[in-house]
Image 1: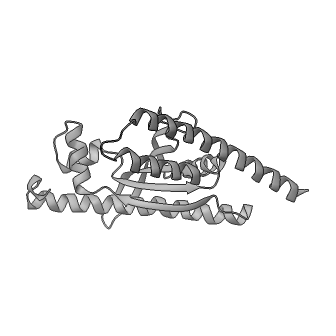
Image 2: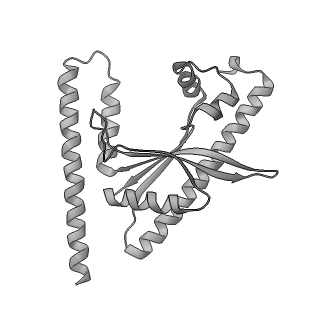
Image 3: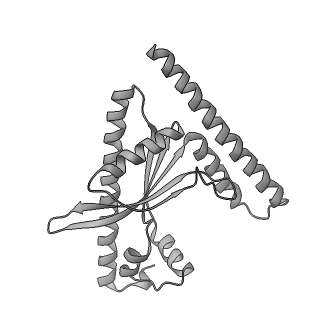
Length: 210
């Protein structure tokens, strides 16, 4: 990786990664605050867990090369939207959309792109909502807008995605088509399970309100 840069570029790269980490923490804090407020209002947390990650230098190099883009610090910031990533695991599908609405209502958040793979699943059955948002970070000498990718899934969707990812990278899989069909079928069952669990929760909450 260091062969790609001279010492000046390495410093710029480290600085850029620090900016992404700050932006990621900024968005995580916003989500944590929403989680606490909504938990107080509804007596339950809208999300179960939250995970953050910064893309590794090797992954950045590989992604730019795959797209045929010249490797430079400027191109990293200009061309890639998922350097800083946050994964939010929610209990129910409607919690996902509620959190997204509240997050995007904040006046310092700018929506760059949204892909809803819950309403429009990928051909393999993958479900999630992906946001690319821009958030300002405040440094000693400037305010700088930075992009962060935020993915929202239910616990069941995350379980499926994790196992599908592990199975997809197995070598020399026999009957791969049959396995893909089974994974798609499991994704459909998980979607039905999410819907049923949400119905049960709604029924419980309605009963408690009476």
